Image (cartoon, rainbow, N blue to C red; front, side, top):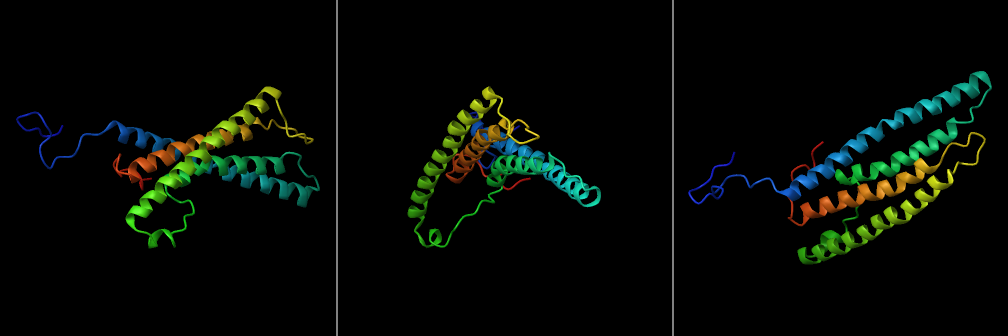
Length: 188
């Protein structure tokens, strides 16, 4: 409970009320944190599948029909979905050589341009990737290999990745431009 003065307003020096935009940004952080950690464990499955294939080929002379596709498609899904996690922790590649030579005003303008281009990119992933995934689901598309697993889960990871990136990018921008508090940006 916050201290209040006689007019019912928060007392000077007390913490500002927890704003809705902060809760939204923190929820986005939580989703990307959870997705990144959950999908990070798939690397263990990829490792097990690759090791199984090596043992099966080397010691038993029997290659599997599933290990190669499992490692490729599971790795692809992990790579895609973990993008929001990387952005949440601000681990994407950024080149600051020119940026740091600019004035604060020019940096702000460049940040706005980058945000606009980023949103176009992420929305394109959601829109076009969603169409591709939906078509794959409707067609019950497989990989066309002897094992022929369904490919739609991998294609569905594209719009999901775009959505996670878009949400995290907007949460980061809200914080960077001062519309939300910086809490949670480096947590986890």
